[in-house]
Amino acid sequence: MSDHLPRITPAQRRARLGRRHLLAPSARAARVEAVADAVVGLHATDPATVYLSACARLREPGAGEVERALYEDVSLVKLLSMRRTIFAVTTELAPVVGSSTARAIAVRERATLLKHLRERAEEHWDEARLAEVEKAVLAAVAERGEATTAEVAEDVPALRERIVMAPGKPYAARQTVGSRLLRLLASDGHLRRCRPRGSWTSSLYPWALVPPLPDLPVREAKAELARRWLAAYGPATEADLKWWTGWTVTDTRRALADIGAQGVTLAEGPGYVVPGDVPGDAEPLTDGGPLAGGEPVADGEPVADGEPLAGGEPAAGREPAADGEPLAGESPVADRSPAAGESPVAGRSPLADDEPWAALLPGLDPTAMGWQARGWYLDPDHVKPLFDGSGNIGPTVWWNGRIVGGWAQRANGEVVWRALTDVGREATAAVAAEAARLSGWLGEVRVTPRFRTPLERDLAS
Image: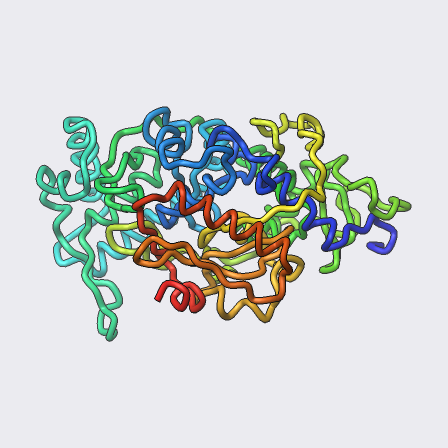
């Protein structure tokens, strides 16, 4: 049946990226909220990624604009959500992400922590004690206004107790209860991360109380998140959406059905776009319709919680890094996302999809980590130098929708890059200009990716 659906080629998919992900120079945004909406959310596991990803898409890059949204206006919030990864999303989208994804992850995180406290803590813990300590933590944070985990532990000594992780293993370690519990309270929606102590690359966050997110019906929230993602990342496959969200197959198929996703044919096989988003030069539709070419929604198809997720991001139950963020693998141009039911083309700036563009994107950038199947923008021969051993992508160099190399910052502040293929003179000049643009706003700040890759290490040395 897919032979009768509109065909969208890899070249057509690449042509969309510069405009939809705000990477073409004329598509860049004025405010970071527009950037976050354009890519649905900014990866935030590595604190620097939010800044580097946003500034690659801002007309006037600078850390101050990102800090305004995160810590002054609080118009971006960080949620442990898709693939058990931290994303920074707009306050408008946060209830959708919370109800569709983050809430279920928080439930699993709580069960995991309670299990570890019962089995591995040095002192006795049960559900009643956990609830008592949580209440004391929230009271201490309220009294202080904002406080780091260590500062809260001065008021709540139970946070200094330790959990033995991986007991009996060569890599066994002891974590404080506080390093786990305050992250859990953030996952539950009780706390938020404030401006870090030190520079914007630091992960030493104070915590503050936060109003709870509104609850939305789960099915409606999943449909809206799928619509937002498909408008930004489509065309894409069912497997891409399942991987990006971390949902079950059943939930993924139901969400696609609920938004009336239109079937198309991709190089990988059946794919989908939001209704009305087939490019004008695609092969005409002669058969099929919404969800044509895909499989029917299977009621109750089991997908085990905690199955390993492709791309190196941790499945539920894997331990977060101590006193930092959990480990990770990894729109319209108008300053808003399309309203529910609106064509994704409406409100978009009439920019040409063939505008040449180059970009230096950070490790775990949302564009680089936007799909499970990456062959249409990443040469398989380039995976080894650009990814770490867990599947986390490092800093990448892009030219017209393809990853063509990698970059790094050296200790003296110099931004250096290397092409992994012959890119030509035009691309070389454009990439050099982007490297200079990046160096200009970084100034004296030094950035080392949390997840280092072979090419980044080589370039930085």
